Image: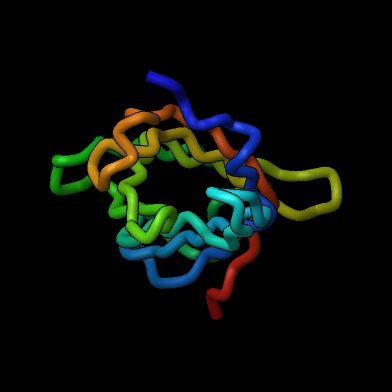
Length: 136
């Protein structure tokens, strides 16, 4: 079984929104070629149990999460090949960056077997990118 090349799915920026205990994190991806077409998609993580969507509250903190089918698991997916493929996320870490902003590091697994991309199986990933917040 081949793995999806990690170089194909690259983050460009992440956006937080929501309220404590129910935060959404969208990771915008760099457009890439898939089956001879350009794909512009994102990884969506919904229902994330974070104490805040404000960056200052999350700086220098690491959060661990159970994987599906646990009820406390993050509802995550990536839209690819006309289907939403689950993303099981185990760790989200917020780190200060050199330019006074924050970066987010996300560890998880793309569950490609669930929606028909069986040739890629379940592919572990680690993504890191800058993050901003829409929290008021």
